[in-house]
Image (cartoon, rainbow, N blue to C red; front, top):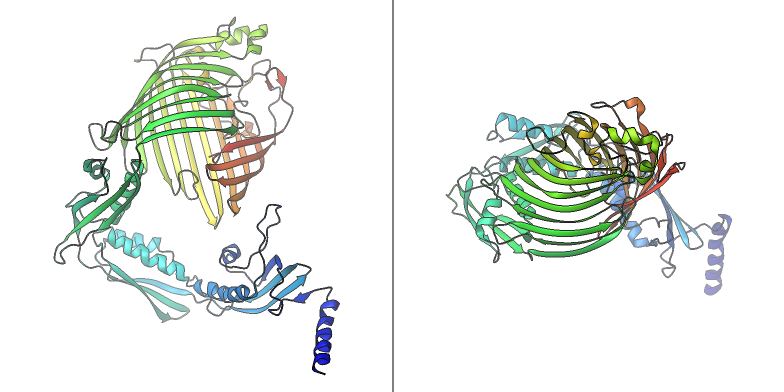
Length: 626
């Protein structure tokens, strides 16, 4: 009888599932079944970032890609995730949030999950107050209040409260209080809570003796001069962080750490202990790859980052590709005459093979650079180069271009231009980004001025200016917006022949206007060949989204053009392209594929004698376009 009753119960239990088109609830009674999570949907989420919530959960949707990692349903994990959702809301200022309902429907070997959330009323911040921060100057205290992520009227986010407390500790640490403590108290107030940051600054202190350990092949003096502080100076935590960046920039250490050493309780001097782990200063690298601009390329390089000691750097490399090939040797003397100055020397023999011309350069440069801080550098470079340029063969064969070639300083019978380039270049760089290779926040600016001829002996005489501005924003997790604008002009002191042909402006390529090939956008000759111009402007905007497992997508718009006139930028003449892109964070660097479509065209453009008619172009490269 019991067996019969159990069988009847089993059959009756199946009826709702059959009536629901094979939808059935998941039960712990069948733990052996492996069910793929096909979908995970939320309802009722309005005030928080749903993508951030999903990253905290163990239950995840399986991606649709063929090479996907399938995610399977686990009942116990899902129950823990339901509690995580409530905790996630509480941490972000929604203590009344709850799960209204949840459904787990089964179809064949997959589940579809639906979770309904009631966010409830948020606990809002009525005010943020500081207590015992009188040791800070008024300006610093006001700056701290402005920088606090907690804002009156917003929900009380526990993460933002912790970050506010940490910012307060750092502010005290930057004014001589290395052992400051800050507590965050909540007090009832109309409409929410008052958050009170209460400080216990402790004793104001100064940097004391510096103890260095872990170095054997690198002198103590090299480590000491990389530090941004000296004994006797007021203690500032930012100086320690800056020192760590400068130690890393030496490339001499695999790791570096700066800690506060024990000191006498009555002493106002705080000793620091610098611990380093050295790395081999001798580097030999062989690399290669493929890109849209250079096609196949290979490179062999040698560098020594402690050449004859004192932190000197020396190197040599040889490169070969369809775009450029050559050899170069470099030497850098840091701390030249003063701690903030460095002297660099470079000699090279290089060949660049652009679609419109071929340039051969032999010579050298000497650069004197001065650091203005951790983010800014100015430099002056004196160049002495012997160069030879040759325009594309089809231009030489076209008799209609004879006068135009002469005006450009090219021999009409050979298409060549040769001479000595003597130039002085002044450059300023401001780099304030979170990650130099893959920035998500911050900005970078470069201004470059170059003068050739005049008091410098040489064949060419001109003045050029190029400015470059880039900015990066992260409006939400895993989403970055990047924008760039670049403008330049070159002005010959006399006729056009005063400018070496390879210095004229061309745009287009994998890191420029991606709808065109490299250097294809420029004023055209009468037969459609790009011959370069005197002014250029280009700008780009790109949306970058990191999806999963290092894979990401992008959408971009590029605009720009080159003009014959000097000191001009006619925005009504801009060329545009747009398209999607795919990104993959490989171990050797970011692999980038862009699919660019020309929104308008360069009429009459010819490359290698062929009229350019296609509007789509695929660009492949390593690293972001900008």
